[in-house]
Length: 131
Image (cartoon, rainbow, N blue to C red; front, side, top):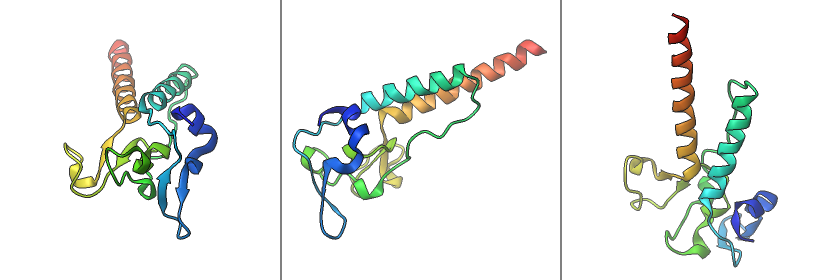
């Protein structure tokens, strides 16, 4: 099942699990599509913002049980089945500011950060206009 939209319907059922509940391989044809998840998160944040909602819980931060065990092997890219906003990677393979934490941001993480910054700027601008 390609794409996040299909995965939304089936979640981690695109993963073949071992008897001891560890991921073995991804279903054939599963495609990582971070942009689809990011677009969905952006649309939902915009809907909630327009409705005046002050806060919302967005997805899951990470699924450590669905870590990517082989970074460039789609059959072992278990994070593709995760709704997490960060990608958990094997020790020593993460680069950048989050390397010590063992994860890297996915596109949805950046959407949330951008939205939060925009909301702060909007709130600050509103307070300045009141002064």
